[in-house]
Each structure stands twice: as C-alpha cells, then as structure tokens.
Length: 137
Ligand SMILES: CC(C)(COP(=O)(O)OP(=O)(O)OC[C@H]1O[C@@H](n2cnc3c(N)ncnc32)[C@H](O)[C@@H]1OP(=O)(O)O)[C@@H](O)C(=O)NCCC(=O)NCCS
Image 1 (tube, helix red, strand yellow):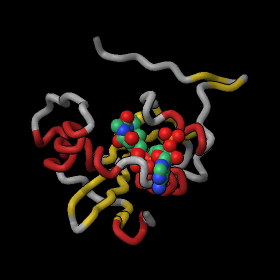
Image 2 (cartoon, rainbow, N blue to C red):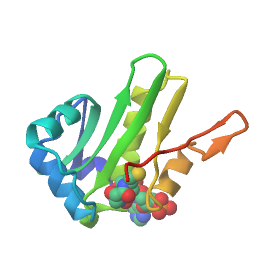
Image 3 (tube, rainbow, N blue to C red):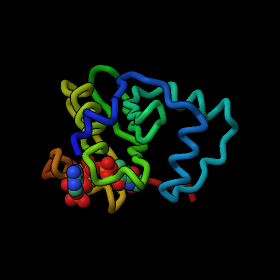
Image 4 (spheres, helix red, strand yellow):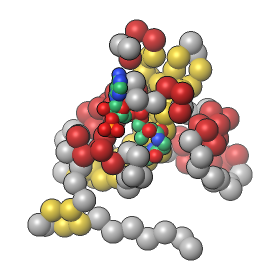
C-alpha cells in the first residue's frame, strides 16, 4: 500500500484528547490517569505529527523539543489494524526532520518500536554516553 495515497500527515498538529486516549487503549497502553485539562496541556507542549485516514486519527508521534539543542520523541502510536504499512515510519521521518539540527535526539523504545528506531539510526548507547531512565514506581 502506498501510505501517501490513503493516509495524510499533518505536522505541528493538535492531537485531540479523545483520539489520544483511544489510540493508547487500542495499542494496549494503560492510563494516563490525568485530568483532561492537564493531559490536553501536555499534548499541546509537543510538536506533533498526526496521521489521518478519511479524517480519523490513525496514528501520531510527539516531539518534545527545546528548539536548539535537544529533542526527544514520545508516544509513537499507530492503530493496530493499520500497522506495518509504513505509517510509523512516515511519522518518525517527519519528527526526526523537524529536529534535524539538534545535537541529540533521544527516545524510549518499546520492543515493538525498536527495530523501526534502529533503522533510523537510534542506538542504545555509544562510547560517549548512554540513556538511563527512571520510572515512577
Ligand atoms: C511502533 C509502531 C508505532 C510502528 O508503527 P507502524 O505503522 O507499524 O510502523 P511501520 O509500518 O512504519 O514499520 C513497522 C514494521 O512494518 C514493516 N512494514 C512497513 N511497511 C510495510 C508494508 N507495506 N508491508 C509489510 N511490512 C511493512 C516495517 O519494515 C517494520 O518492520 P519491523 O518490525 O522490522 O520494524 C506501532 O507498531 C505501534 O503503535 N505499536 C504499539 C505502541 C508502541 O509500542 N509504540 C512505540 C513506542 S516507543
């Protein structure tokens, strides 16, 4: 399937709250247990790429970006029925392009996302640094 013929991609887009919650649930992610206003504010603080098919949100990814030095990628989600068609790849390509001049772009990968990220040059560490994460318990 040619992704571009059926699915459109909007850059710097808002992610509607209901779609964010729906896609998280579709891929089996829990939560987040935040009030709507709090969650909506968080979604507005990132530069988002939103994929739509016939108007419906079918995927998105979020870039948390300081605009100069560092950026990170969060919440890459594609609706399960439309996975493995290149939609995630297209979203990721656009997020990376937006942060192309940052000296470091980082992300936290699920096992499912990891091969895609590795194809785009993300590595678990290099001789100069490695990523560590701290999860709220
Ligand atoms: C990770 C995720 C966003 C990828 O989205 P996607 O749209 O399926 O991504 P793509 O289609 O671009 O690539 C996924 C795989 O499909 C393959 N693929 C792409 N186009 C294809 C096509 N036309 N036919 C068959 N396979 C194809 C890719 O080679 C890739 O293979 P891989 O398993 O070796 O990586 C999606 O699987 C998802 O939402 N997962 C659940 C949530 C999650 O874990 N997100 C990652 C957070 S870090």
